[in-house]
Image (cartoon, rainbow, N blue to C red; front, side):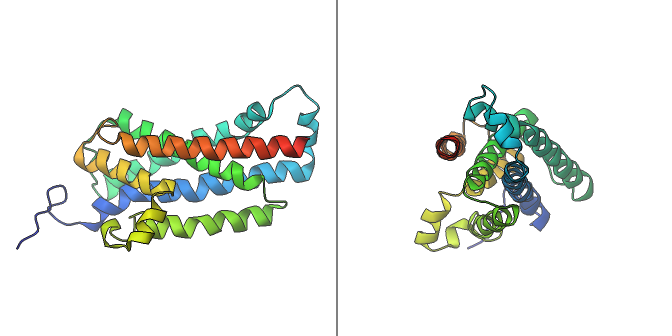
Length: 210
């Protein structure tokens, strides 16, 4: 029996690593930056000032996380550029599809960061909880180890993690020229995760305001 590598015939590790690395970097920065930034605003008393204005919780949260969306897209561009120039990683799919997938994942990661900020009372606590979420995602998402080789229980748990779905998305678009329609289940999973996390964050934030 012989194994045929259709999308990486040379079996270069960078071909599989660089697409997944986009998700890892976005996970570490988006979750951490958002959680720490919101907690820092609370520590400084700025949130209390905003509470006195006629701003709804969802509007307040959106205003805090929107700048990080731009930062995430810039990070995606940097990794893609270095991947193509230094490691010669191909982008077989459409750039619009790729950036749409990245934007979806950025929203999911930011929603997790916002949710963490509703529990943390200090910036140090926010950093600790954020780092606690990194390891399971990196180990179980398929970025480091083959997803199919993991125990069934680990696979079920990994399906909850947003990085698992983004790794499938970015590798599918970059290496197989797949479309978002082909990978719609992964897109829906990310959107569902973002909706649940943001809804819980808004509810907890409103409770704090009360």
